Length: 261
Image 1 (tube, helix red, strand yellow):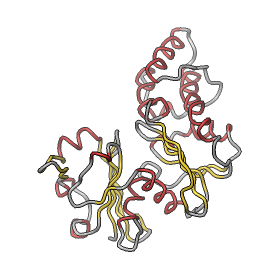
Image 2 (image 1 turned 60 degrees about the horizontal axis):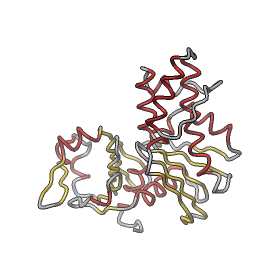
Image 3 (image 1 turned 120 degrees about the vertical axis):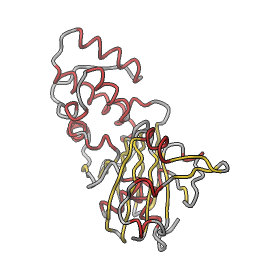
Image 4 (image 1 turned 90 degrees about the vertical axis):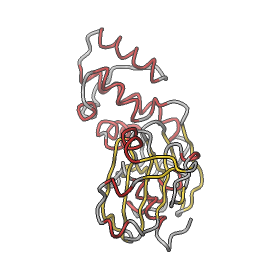
């Protein structure tokens, strides 16, 4: 094993272990239970009880380099780890997973969204929306609860969406309840929820070249979102094999002794 990466996300904590460019294993844990069970403060620094996580190959990862990123990274002082910005981690993960050097990365995480541009492997520009969770996984979770369905069911529908115009996640819930009362079908309501994500990310994406968009984050697994995005841009859409673990994979790739900081 050459590197271990951790993405301390707002909804999930993701782990990735690499051997060179090969992903050895991936793991994820719900964030709040993870901190309750496996994290503690030690002299003002964060201590993770990695031995208690049941991670594979304990003889290897205990001694390999560790890089961490994620939500709240500015307050992380993790014992035994190097902390890097999320943009750096996700860029490295996207490049490793796709083999591309020129692309726009759209990362939709648990509570924020990021658009990052790479030209010939060099980060040239980025936008980040961390003020409102309306274009994030948390938004989809909340709307699925309002509809009393699973995220998997929500992600199946994109056709004939009901119009949902509220730009705030909280007001969006109230608007969705109003559409339910009007008697619209579940399929159209789900499509409307997925369409709202497109309305929120396209203004960000339009500021970048429409050549190739790499998708990462948990929302990238939403099939309806990908279909609607494909209808809204001329860019080629690229879905990495492990979109939800992209940040952790990027960290692991930068943890290798030969990686650049």
